[in-house]
Image 1 (tube, rainbow, N blue to C red):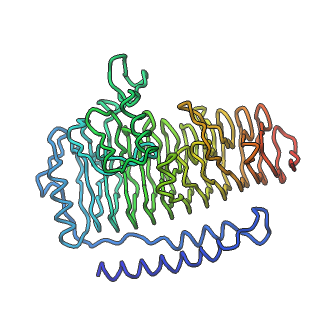
Image 2: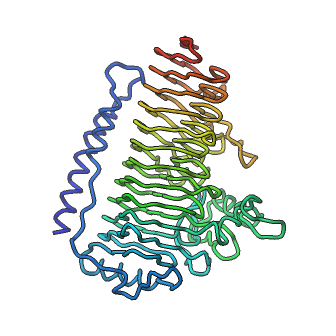
Image 3: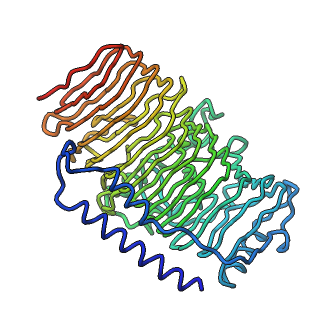
Length: 479
C-alpha cells in the first residue's frame, strides 16, 4: 500500500513540476503584466506531495524508554524507530513525560510523534554524537550528528505538540560559540580557534573531499538541531523547539518539505529558525519564530563549496508566520553561492525592537551567486530596528570577504506592506558598480515612521507604486 502511494506521489510531483517549468520558461521582466508570480506559487504548492503513514503505532516505552528526565533513552528510541521501519512504517509515539536521549536518527516511512506533554531532552555530551555527513555554515564536512538527523530518507515526519529541548543553554554547545554572553572565557576552546572554522573553510577552498574533512571531537563546531539531508517528502508539524545548539531546522539538499505550525523559541548563537540549503519546494507556514539569529535564512552553500555543489535553493514559500526577535524576518544568505530564486512570502507579521530587518539579502564577492525573483505581500510590520528591506553585496561579518565572484541581485517585489516603525531606512541597498542591484518594486506600501526613505548605492530601477513613507508619496527612481 505504501509503495503504491509512493508511486502516485511521485507522479503527482512530476506533473506539477512540469507545469512549473512551463511557467519558468522564457523569463520576463518583473513588472510584465503577463507574469503573475503568485499563480506560479500556487502551482508549486499543489506539486508538493504530502506524507502518508501506516496506522501502526510503536511507543518508545514499549522499548524500554523511561520518561523521568534522567534515564538515557537513546537505545530505546533507536529500537522503536528501527522496528517501525522494518514493519513498513507508522508512528513512533513519545508519551507524556521527559525523555533524555542522545541523537535520534529517523528512517523512511516513520513519523516521530510527541504527545502534548512529552518533552525530549537531548544530551549535551559531545561524545554521544557520532560523526555523520553534515554541513556547518554552508560547508559540508564530517561532524557531530545533528540532534535529530535523517539522510536519504523518504516519507518521514516529526509531529505532535510536545517539546524538543536541545538543552544547549546548560551545556557545552553555546559556550563553543566563543561569545562571552554565552559563558565563554579566555582559555576555553571554541569554534573561533584557528584549527576549527578556518581549517574547514580552507579545506573547502582547496577541494579536499568531504570524507576527509573530519571534525568532531577537539574541533568545537556545534551540530544543527534538526537536519534532513537529501530527503524527500517530509513533514514537521506543531512541535515546539527550544535551546538549540546551532541552526534549528536545516533541510539540506532536500525536496518537498512542509514545515507547519512550529513554535521556535531559542536565543542562542547562530540560532536561525529555519535554514533551507540547496533545497527546493519547501513550505514554511503557520510558524512562530523567536530566535537569536535570522528567523528564516535561505542558503545555498558557502564560496567554493557552494559552487561545487551548485544546487540553488528555490521554490521556498513562507505563509502566515510570526517573526519576533531575530536578525531578520526572511533572509537570503549569506551562504548563498549556488543562488536562490522563487521565494514567496505572504500574510506574515513581524514585530520586535530586537528584529533588525523584515526582508534581507546578504552576499559578497567571495560568495557570488544569483538571487532573484523574491516576492513579498500582505505583511504587517510593527517595529524593526534597522530597515524594512536590506540588500547588500558587501556582507563582511567575519572580515576578509572580498573575492572575484561578483554576485547578482534582481527582481524584488514588496506589495501591500504596512509598517509602523521602520527603523533607520525604508530600503537599504548596496550593489557593485559592475553588478548593480536591479528591479526593486514597492507597491501599496505604507511606512508610517522611518528615519530616512532609503540609502541606495549601485541600484537600478527602483519603483514606488502608491507607496507612502513618513506620510509622503514616494516617486520612483529610474537610472
